[in-house]
Length: 135
Image 1 (cartoon, rainbow, N blue to C red):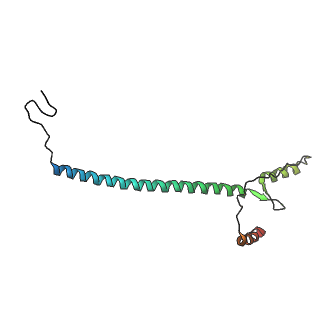
Image 2 (tube, rainbow, N blue to C red; image 1 turned 180 degrees about the vertical axis):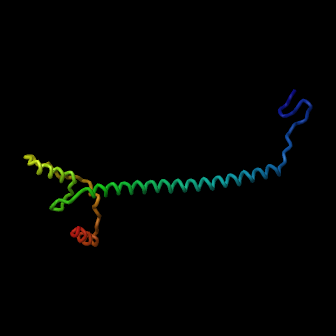
Image 3 (cartoon, rainbow, N blue to C red; image 1 turned 60 degrees about the horizontal axis):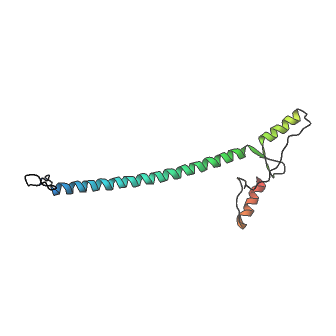
């Protein structure tokens, strides 16, 4: 009968394994693993910074778009609302054509905060009023 791991001749065949070679191989693999983990940490840190930069860039683009739109607006005579340049063009066209129908302009009451609204406290409100008075 054949037993597990025993040849018919009765001897077990084991490959020649040198313990020192295995220990060297294990230390090499461990050093490679620590190097890979260090590189992985660096890449993770870089990815986090990249995501943060993308968020900042998106915020800057949004702010830039808001201010670009605000630059296309002008204050009305009472300086209480902003008029789009198209509204001025409509009024000029209606005047030039001697039209009986005026351009329609409605103020919308919204709950949204103006993009140039600044939260002020007791101290900064007086400074903001000075800035608002000089435009």
